[in-house]
Image (cartoon, rainbow, N blue to C red; front, side):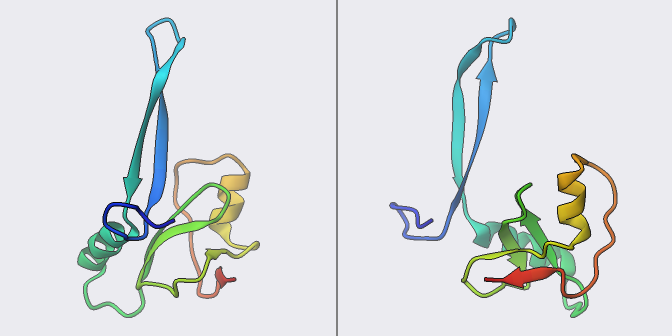
Length: 105
């Protein structure tokens, strides 16, 4: 989505707040810029043409990627090991990645 203030592409992240007893006590929501993550990943990767880094939701939709992908909607390929790990409920660990496991739609 496009943020109203700066007119930049953003995605929203929210987390519930709970009381010590576990009762819902509101929510914190922030808009994050994919460009921030792209710049951070660029710093990590440097000039390596064989490395790419990204941030994806558990449903496989890609939020940020470096090197930057086309602005079209992109998602993890159905057969990608990261999508499989999400589907299995894994939230930590190492996922080995191969070229071609990201699709452009």
